[in-house]
Figure 1 (tube, rainbow, N blue to C red):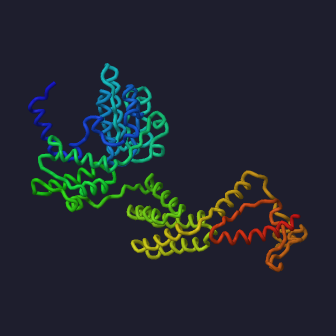
Figure 2 (cartoon, helix red, strand yellow):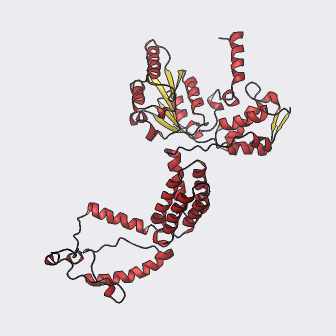
Figure 3 (tube, rainbow, N blue to C red):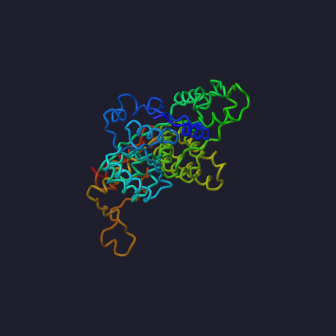
Length: 441
């Protein structure tokens, strides 16, 4: 049915007040940029659509990657009614009203409802549970969007009934294609402003937006609308002036926190100081708690460097104390020193593996009694029990090592590696163990 002149005028007026990112939303799946790992030809989501078997799904990923837009396109593709709620502003009452409306529509033979819930992880357990019956019965096709890991933030019952699709930040090429489309689009974009964008400006916007299409299009629009020149040469300098200082996407208690911490630790363990510095800077710029960083570095000094470099732990402890004493921003220098030292230090997890094996024996094996000659002999009556009898004082031995069995069974937990100071420890330990075995033999 053709739209009336009034409807056409209203649509034009509404479009005029929309930001460029909203106007340039793709209208078909073919216009949708990115996420080809699940939306490309032959991939799972495309197959579900082709088979007309789209069930409930959860979209998980960073902002600006198209979660809301794709939900709207799915409603169009499946000829469903589109209803949207935000878990930030909606409560159980709003949810029940939408679900009742969907039931009424289904009962009268109407179209199925696709219910899009933005920030679904912000619904509490009761609100999420309220969705289950209608999801289970197919009354609604649920599309939940979240920036938090759904396996932690969404109830298990809902996760088990949904396909999880993880969105990735758009690639620089995807972003550049979107910017070029916006520049050339006369109906929705900026073609009337006669914009010619320099290649280095295009590259800059594609890089600085971190895969967020909304951020890139907003910067482009700001640059164009704030300039009077027509035709407009959109330069790298104009691009830089049109971009806000980026807000690092970082949830101090969520995935980004733990993923960045994991990357930092694994980079240092892998002896890459440059990667370690990047992840340190990323976390500092996002406002990470300095005490958390210090704790992780102290743990790593023992867990991954250990006795291969005995100076690693004192340096990490000194870093912790210095950071507590001087605070930010100056303690960034101390953290940088610690990260680079630990990354370049020889690595050994021999002490870590040793305590792990010993704990396993304690927990799972038969407990070894303390040999009588090693038991405490400092209290009255201990001698009557024979405690301490036969104990050899190590300092009386010429080399400081007494030939004595200190465990009662043969075990070797600590196996020094052939790196750093542990190479010397390994040579020393081989001689010590040879002498200790004399007591057993």
